[in-house]
Length: 174
Image (cartoon, rainbow, N blue to C red; front, side, top):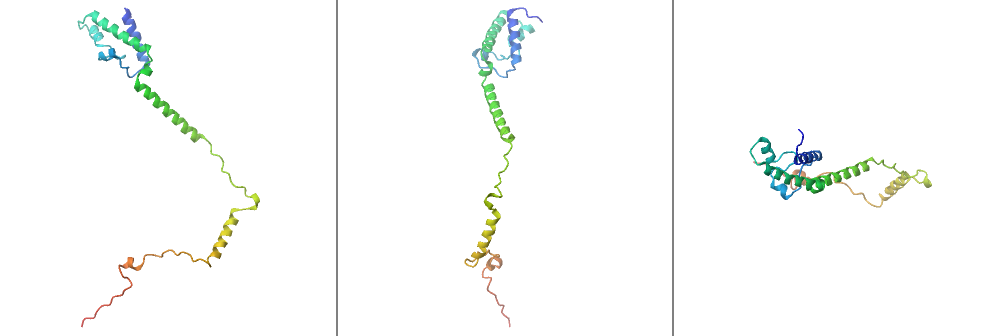
């Protein structure tokens, strides 16, 4: 179908550009809010009724269509991506998420540095010599200080009740 007048040319090119942009939401505009179906993917009510032969006045449909074309041109002149708050917020969230993922991948891609071990032959000192020296000093200390004994188990009162050391006698009945 070939467009026959200027309004059809403009609407077809504008709708084509909006479909290419694939914008999910429209900026809030007073004229856009007055029309219930101002959406780039669908035709407006007047155009549908006019094409279906609903008997609407063609001049009225063209004037409202011209107003909508003015809205579309104004919207195209603006940066659509920056006017839609949801799109801007989604882009910002995507950028933050991508930056976080890049930082994490950079952190995990680093090769760990080889562990630095102390030189075994430095000044002839070894760790084991200090451990042996400490063990000898603990043996000497046993003569001066008593070791703390760990409890071997519960005392008798807890095991068999109160006053476990008392033995009871039974009376003989005569």
